[in-house]
Each structure stands twice: as structure tokens, then as C-alpha cells.
Figure 1 (cartoon, rainbow, N blue to C red):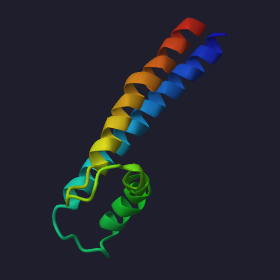
Figure 2: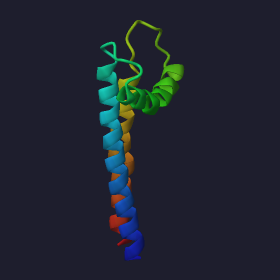
Figure 3: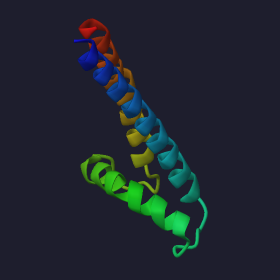
Length: 99
């Protein structure tokens, strides 16, 4: 059973790293949105392509009226922190119990 425990522990570690990287991508995309970036820049296009589907999902479900402030990056960051605190820790705890 230690193999399954190691697999679940490794999965938790990889998930934690992926969530951390995506959180930094969200932060960078939010900071870039404050200026008028070149839409043809490959970095700006990558950031837009990676974050806009998630931001759009949050914007469609956000009950706040459009006040000129986009709260979707904040909500996405809070969701990532929740996943790191709940899902990753639960997987780590499960891996410890399996071993």
C-alpha cells in the first residue's frame, strides 16, 4: 500500500505546484490589465488565453453589478487558496494514512 500512498502524496505535491503557478499567472494577468498592453504580444496573448476562460466563468456567475472593478481575479485567487488548503492537504493526509 505504500506505493499508493506515495502516488497520492506525489499527486498532492504536483497539484500544489500547479495551483501556485496558476495563482501567479492570475496575479500577473491582473497587473497587466491595469496598463494598456499590446494585444499582439505573445506573453499577453498567453496570459489572456490561460486566464480568460476562468475569469469569464466567474464573471458570468458573479452577482455584483458592473461597477468598473473586476473582482474575478480576487475570487479566482481565493478559490486557488481554498483548493490548496483543503484539497492538497486532504490528499497529503490521505497519503499519510495509506502508508
